[in-house]
Image: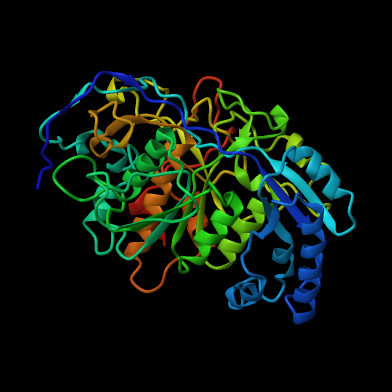
Amino acid sequence: MASTRSSRQPRSQVPAPATPPGELVVVTVPTGPEITPIALRENRSVRGHVDEMLPASAHLVPIFGPDNRLAARLADTSQAPVTGEYLSYYFVRGELGDLGELAHRLREDDTVAAAYVKPAAEPPLAPMAVNTVATQAPSVTPDYRVRQAYLDAAPTGIDAVWAHGRPGGLGTGVRVIDVEGAWRFTHEDLRHNQGGMIGGTASDDVGWRNHGTAVAGEISGDLNPFGITGIAPEAHIRAISVFGIGSAAAIRSAADALNPGDIVLIELHRPGPRLNYQGTPDQRGYIAVEWWPDDFAAIRYAVSRGIIVVEAAGNGAENLDDPLYNTRPADFPATWRNPFRTVDSGAIVVGAGAPPPGLHGRDHGPARSRLDFSNHGTRLDAQGWGREVTTTGYGDLQGGPDEDLWYTDQFSGTSSASPIVVGAIAAYQGMRTTHRATPDQIRTLLRTTGSPQTPAPGRPTTQRIGTLPDLRAMTAKG
């Protein structure tokens, strides 16, 4: 049934998402490779010692949750029994003052293997051509499906329409958790198959809220006669905010709330060493979050539990194969290795490709060519549309005073690309008739099927972002 109402509002700017605070992460000296009663006692002693070095109002919070439960959570995973390193990761909560100075002081203690300040995580949203709320909403929301060409047959889209006609192809029974900042799950097109926010503290910033709403719409927008249609509308979507708990703890919490074959989406990137970790409005130099040790550990933890982790590559226009990323920062653990080239988190990393030229009256280059802002490199597994994505939120396509009625056709960045890959995975997993595919199987399918990347002037296919998923081809091969 169509949604009806009448609303008007003056044209207004849609602000960019607010920046969350940086995070102080502490890695204590490991107490052993396994989680034993002796290791637990020693770890608690070390934690108490480090807590005494913090300001009175601050304390360590274990990123991987209560230590006495960690062994049980990992008992049946690929990483058992070598799990002791997870006991060493903490973030610091409380009034801290100068984070850099405190991190330096902590690193001087023999029980601290590393202490570093992570720059604020931000949503990997590329600037939109029109950043305004439409002046009004009609009395009945139109059907915007015709604008969602990413649902169409390959090579234009991912062939979600074909999947929707197959048993389970709507993402039936698959669960997804989006990790970022805020959402509006009261949106008129997000009323079904969603469980709301289950962790962290939602930002009250409209920029984060629009972003999360747009992501949720791409993946699991309701199957109805109005608005948009999700790639996997029967997938059950929930959310965990990084505010209050940090990105690594959010990823770990998401993994603990899912079953093998379900999906965690990381809709974040942050300024990297090219910028000396300083943010910029154009996001140049921003990279995928797995480069930081605690986020890498959290992703690896999730993958070891059989969870499919999909991670935005970031909008920094960076070659992630650059030797720059091999250099270990002095405040990282001595055991750190470059996850873009040397060690593997197991996540599926997504770049941003161009939509078909002329879509919505705009041209971003050859379809599936790397968009100029997208990071690239051998680490990337797949691409999604990084421009012209029609979904819920923002209000430039349909606006008015009520955010629950907002739609956009300009969602962008590796922000818009990553949910396309998540939707494809959810639809594929829903069609599996016996058992869910593993993280490695999904990544192999994405790398060996799909519509190939194309070149653009100054952006050859050697600047890898991978293929655009093709659900029909994935199903035929898998």
